[in-house]
Amino acid sequence: MNYRGRAVRRGEFLKLVGAAALMGAVPAQAQTKEMLSRPIPKSGNGERLPVIGLGTYGAFRERGDAAAMDKKTQVVRALFAGGGKVIDTAEAYDESEALCGEIIETLGARPNTFISTKIWQTGKENGRASIENAFKALRVETIDLMHVHNMVDAAVHLPILEDYKAQGRFRYIGMSHSTPGAQDGLTEWMATDKLDFVEFNYSVDVRGPEQRLLPMAADKGVGVLVAMPFGSGGLIRAMKGRDVPEWAREELGCTSYAQMLLKFVVSHPAVTAAIPRTSNPRHMSDNVGAGLGPMPNTKQRERLAAVWENA
Image (cartoon, rainbow, N blue to C red; front, side, top):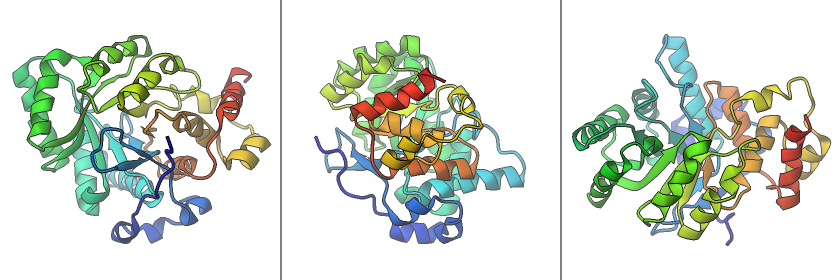
C-alpha cells in the first residue's frame, strides 16, 4: 500500500493562525516541503492525517500564568505551521481538554484540527457525563476521535461510543492503553471490528507492539496513534552532548535525535501518526521536521534503533 499519498493542504489556515510569524522557529525544510500523511484506514472518503501530532499529557496539565498559556498557544501554532493536525488529550490530563479547546477556538483552528480525546470512567452514567463534559471543555459539537482510556470498563463504554458515532457526534472511536505490559489486551477489542483507532506506546525501547499490535492493526484496518515515541524521555537525554550521526543527516535528513526517534516510529507502515508530548514551541517545531524528507527503510530502522542499543 502506498502511504505517502497527497500533501496536507493548509494555506489559508496558516494565514489565519499567523504562521508567517513562526517561520523563524520552524525548520527551514518545513517551510518548503509538506509533511508526510497517512490514510485513516476506515475513512470513507480517503481522509489522511499528517504523521506528526501533539500529545498533551503533562505538557498541558494546568493553565499557569499568562506567559505559560501563551507558550502553550505557541506550541499549537508550531504544530500547525509545520503541517501537523492531530492534538491528543484526555479527561485524565487535568486541565488539558479545556486548554486545548480554548487555544483551538482562539486560533480559529477547528476546521484544521483533528481532536483525539479519551474517557476514563466506570459505569454508564459516569461515562456519558464524561463525554458531555468533553464536548463542553473542547468547545465543539463533534469530536474527531474518542477513546476508552486504558480500556477501563470498555465493555460498558464501547456501545456508548458507538451510539455517539451513529449520531455523528464522534467521527471515529477507539481504545487506548499506556502500559506496555497490558497493551496486548487491545487485540481483543480490535478483533471485534468495532474500533477505528487504537493508541499505545511504541518507541525504539518499547518494540513489543511490532509482534502483535501493529500487524493486527494493519490486518484489521485500524488506525494507530503512537504515544510516548520518545520512551520515557530518557532516550533523548542519553544523547545529550552528542552530534547526530552523519549517516542519519545524509540519508534521512535528521537534524536532531528527536527526529531520529520519530522517524523510527512513523516509518512503520501501520502507524498513522505519532503524538510526542511537549510544552516547548521549539521542540514542537523540531518534531514536525521528522515528518519531512526520506523515511527509513527496514535496514535503516534497525540502524536507528541500534544507536540507543549501543549508547
